[in-house]
Length: 268
Ligand SMILES: C[S@@+](CC[C@H](N)C(=O)[O-])C[C@H]1O[C@@H](n2cnc3c(N)ncnc32)[C@H](O)[C@@H]1O
Image 1 (cartoon, helix red, strand yellow):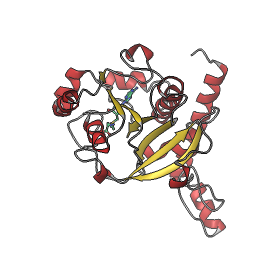
Image 2 (tube, protein in one colour):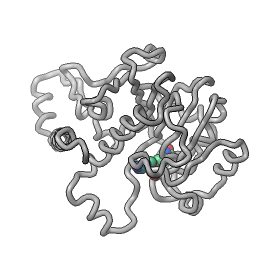
Image 3 (cartoon, helix red, strand yellow):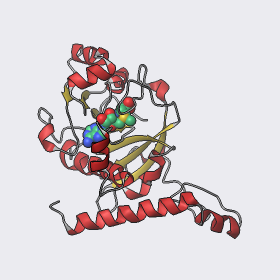
């Protein structure tokens, strides 16, 4: 991940504030940190160690910040940031089995996660980023299930004027003290390799040269499954008939249906 001193940064969906706290070692021009949980819930899950460190440095903190719900953005200075960062986004955990059944009733969880990420991009560019600033959104994610099933480089920004710029390795050693959190429990997420994906309203950005363009686009690869290269035609056919590919095709179909529905019902 690239962080520059002159940037004003907003973090979204920090679990225990350890990422926001670690960001301070990069001495950004400004930082506002937000947590989806209430302060009480966060403290109960992870303690308030990082909150205390950030508060001592007078970093603005907002708890109960739901990126999809403007009513929860109280205290946020809108359109004032250069970059908005969401580390390892994932839908919040369910409080009960009935909530799980209720929320997953009509919509596939893959679609719900893609909706969250798309909303993150749209709201960041519309409400959080300074139109005269750097205009950057970062999502750090992993190449394991369920994260790898979102077609993150190609599917989130379609039918918007947001551009996908590329990706860069996420090196956690540059973020001292950062603990990648599980959505719910007081546990660390397995330390698998992370990648930071970058979007901007600008087609070409100063950062572009440092980023790797979208991967798995060549003809001998499968973009959806991030698989290949397929040397023989037979390998491609076998892949196309595999359970993994069939499932990804279904996720993609559901996502396209969802986009169509919202395009036809913009008020929803
Ligand atoms: C896998 S955890 C990662 C937590 C933290 N970013 C980290 O890197 O340790 C996913 C996070 O996304 C947050 N999240 C999910 N939905 C959100 C929403 N609508 N608005 C803001 N944050 C959200 C959850 O609260 C949770 O903290």
